[in-house]
Each structure stands twice: as structure tokens, then as C-alpha cells.
Length: 451
Image 1 (cartoon, rainbow, N blue to C red):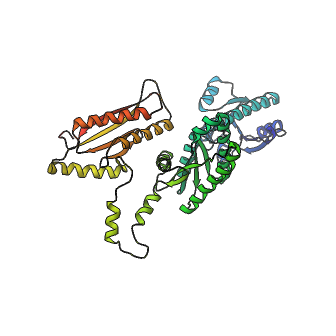
Image 2: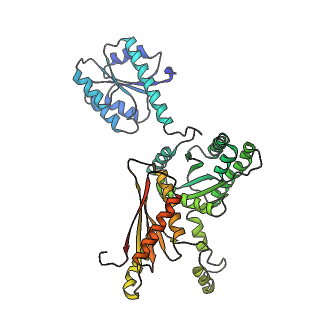
């Protein structure tokens, strides 16, 4: 294995390069550079497993070269060993503080040189393995949330534009665990991970976020039809292959939430939040399907216009815009829409004598508890549910931040606003399953002089 390792030797003295090569050439693949500048240019084209770097060189010495290597994210993790004739502690301390892993003195002792290089490469292999394992899900072998966050960030930072973010949730998974046990449940998770891994291309990414929730990020531009075909293919594979594991005729299906980049966001948190809301819609409406966070809404709006007419029929338009939602509870809007509604109500309150209260709900950590963003996101989902089921149609709510929701209560006194706020808190307490997270609120009358 060591014979395949690639070492770059940097020294301005040809004799020193030849001496190092004689010791190492039967054990490693070697490249040479006679200056710091040559080494930096070489690293733009290739990434060796180890760099042997002379300290004393003209123009750009070893310390300056190391500083450039460490300042570049693409080369910062390559281990560097200084080659030196210096026997001064100050030089060693300076080099180690800058990030060098060791010093090898010239003239080279072959046994010492090989021993140190082998040990450094073993340490580097261990570091790489630990780095990979820390980003992998232990059960399924898929990437974890942290890797997916970093991968999406790299994609957009690298000029990526279009992508499809999908959250997959196994329907009724708790029931499967309860009926058949956690060993079978784990087997289903592992098999589903294989299905997802086999469904994506080499540049795409799949991760297990937690429990029975998985995320796929498809990089590139896809039509809505192509995305639906992909979801259908994964769901069909799940139904047919998992049925063999369960063995009792139980149908195992998927709920899928879809968010699109760039329309729904350019980062993990934005895309996850939108896809999670779309997933919630599927769960509320019978499960076993996929839903686009934004595309479905746009299609519903376009459907108002007749297929063969460029104008809108007034009767049809009136019917559509006046149709009440079949779902009870508050109107949920995006933050910009909430601002417009608030500004309108605030301006009209003085003329109409109407009363309105604004509530701000905030999730906080209790004591020393600290949860992952995933847990906080789920607690926020439960807060949204508590708000919606506790309010009337006509009240308005929106997510204000990653840990806050704001509510606009129409025709409500401050006393009744307090009662409603406490009702929401009580409902959330029943829904919340995470210890160490508390819900606080504040209330203020819209149009009050202190605003």
C-alpha cells in the first residue's frame, strides 16, 4: 500500500534530492521540485500524500512555502515534514506551530527517515478514516446530515445553479417496528438506503438525516415530470423490495417532499425547511406520494387561466379567489406576505376601530440542553401545527426565524390574546417530544403607541 503513496520532495540542492530518492524510490512514488515556487505550481496540478520540504531555500524558504500550502484549503491537509540541517529548537517550534508534522535531519539516516514517513502516513490514514466515518451514518453507511450540508454548500459556492432537494419518509414506520421489531426495522432502513444509493448519479448525494428520514440532492436541472418519475421509481422499488423483507403483505410506501433550487433556496436549511413543509402536506393528505413546495402552488394559479383563452373569465376568477380552504386553522403565509398583511391592518385599525394582537413564539433551550438543528426543526414543525390547529381562519401566521413563529390575531382583545397564546403553548407541550426545549411568547396590540 505504501508503494502507491505519492511523496513530493522539495529541495534546492540536486544532491539532496538524489539522496532522498535513493532512500525512498523503492517504497513510494516520487516527484521533485527545486524551489518553493515550483512546489506551489506542482500542487495546483497534483495532490501528493506527503511533502518533504527543505527549510533553507533561496527566494522562498520552507516556512514561506508552508504558509502558502496551509492557507490553501485544497492543500492545507497534506502532511508536511521539514528537511533541515538546523539543530535549533526555535526552528522546530516555529515549524510545528505553522503545521509541520515532523523534522528529518540531513544527512538522511535511511532507517530513521523511512520509519518516520511510514508513521506519519499511518497517522494520516487514520485521520482520513476518522474524518469519513464522522460523516457517515453508522447503520446504513450513507452520508449524514453534516456531510449533506457541506456538500450542498460546496455545490452552490462552486457555481452550481439548479438542484432538486427531496426528503423521503417511510410511511407508518413506527407501526412496522411495533409489529415486527427493531431488527426488521433496521433491515428496512438498510435496504431503503441501498435503493436510494442505486437511484442517484455519481455527482448526486444521499444522506440519512435521522430515524426513517432520508434526503437526496440531485444536482442539475430537472423537469417536474422527470422528478415525479424519479419519485415513482423509488416508491415502486420500495414497495416491491421491502415487501419481501416484511413478508406479511404489508405495503411499505413513501411520503416525499420536494424543494427546488434556486426557487426555494440556495442552502441546506432553506431547502430542507421547504421540502419538510411539502412532506408535511403529503402526510396530512393520505401519505404515499410526493409534493412540490412551490411548483404545485404555481400550477394551481396557472390553472385559473383557461387553456384556450388569453383572458380570465370573471365568474371563474371570482369562484377561485373566494373559495375557502377545506383545511381549518390559521392562514400560513411567507414572511413577505405577512409583512404586507400587517402593514395593511396597522394602517386600517385607526379608521375601523378593529383590534388585533401580534404574538411572537420563541423556542429556547432549558439549562445545559443543546439540540441539533434537526431536532429544532422538528420542534418548529410541531409549533406550526400547534398554532394552526389552535387558531381560526382569518388569523395569520408565518415563520419569523429558525426558532420563532409570529401570529396576527384579528378582532381579539389582549386578554383573549393571552388565552389563545396559552392554548397554543399547551397544545405544543402535548406535541413536543424533546426534553430541554421550552416555548415562550410575547404579545402586543397592533397599532399601539409604543410601536
